[in-house]
Image (cartoon, rainbow, N blue to C red; front, side):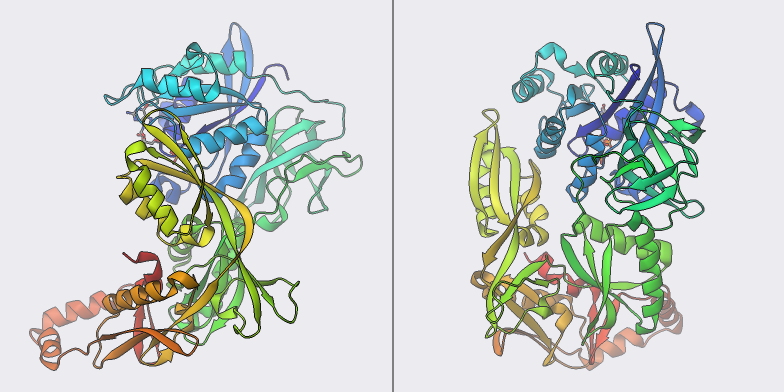
Length: 597
Ligand code: GTP
């Protein structure tokens, strides 16, 4: 145990976490050149393409230092705010963290939020100034920033480059010298923390854990405390590049477990594994059920594909327990599902996986957050609204609450004004403003989560010319003046286009949605009136004009081979388009509310 070190790498997105992890794996001989792929830890295709780590994984390295053999367990953490709960459990499985800071970008919002998580878990922090090879690197200044943030000595900051491999040996030595060995009692009842799980279509769910006390043995009868279920440990082992089967995994170590569990729902990140016959009295603290933050409808483009969509979603859920869905029906779109996601990125990933892995063509409707409504009749009973169409009639409504977040934004002082205006426009209230240095400011706001869902990131990027980083955490529900804005196409309400908006902005946003829809709806043989309404009151109107006859003639007449080409192009890949009444609505129209200028 004294020669084990468990650590994670925390950083703001793109500060070079995955690249540096690869260098550590190479230097310790954990991967050979032949096995080397860029960003080895990102094993899903999708992850590699998007260049972000979606799921966390663990890998064990052997390292000899001064004649002593060490086991270094690196636990990788996802870098996006949608997955912050997984980050927190990975951190809880470690004694130390490498805090990577880009030598050109310096400290950013997620550097700080991840650092706080690590400090809450009493981790030893090893600060690393990364990308020192960059011509734009600012090593002295950024080192000062780190020293200010951590209260460490400048000599504690290790200079490194994931690109050239500079500093990697120093990092390994610091891991051994500064990060404490795990504590724990090998003779106590088993107590292990689940920090991740992965779906394998042959073996079922593989559970990743860190043993705090006791050991976990092959063939042992084990119990998951939060779900209160018992299993046999069919296989246990440690995680090298491949899994290494072992008879047992002991106190302080990190490993995997196969129990024949088939669905991700049974394995909850943060749960504690113990011995069924001799259980531990305490579970490891910090377990939470992850809650979806963003909801949207997913509908098949072809109504006949509904059953196939259900099958695909069930399959997806087997390996992504954070995806939740219930059947719903929409007057406009027919049968589909209301789905809950961890955030907008998670939503995009699910949609993409449905298309790639299951060959489904789907329409995703306007995303919304989850509201609480209270009726006059039952003012104490929460009505959970995951769909704007469920909002009770205003005459019956007592009040509505919406989720709020604490948003933290780090930007250059030049952009403070613009960032503040944006946040205020987004109904934010400033709660703090701290100058990290003379040029860099941290702003904190209380803001409605819904405003983050609606095109916040893009706007922030624009107003700050890219010099702003952003992070948030939920702070609970607050009462809010919300109204439902309905959209009518050709006089017919399209329920899937409805959105809940704050009463103060409803008119102006309703007007902008209508204008945007006019741009997005393809012209047809007739005029299409587009209207926004609150209750019976129309608040905005535009018209998509009919195609003129001669234009059509030009388009479809002419030489036959061109026409055939066109037809073939249309056949290839169903268009993401739904017919509602006699109006064709393309996928983008459902997202219009997110893309208002
Ligand atoms: P996430 O996993 O998405 O959080 O990002 P990350 O922190 O792992 O960053 P990643 O390793 O993907 O690196 C981000 C970008 O920086 C990539 O384009 C890398 O090639 C580049 N990069 C990483 N380390 C270095 C470095 O030391 N020097 C230079 N010049 N570029 C680097």
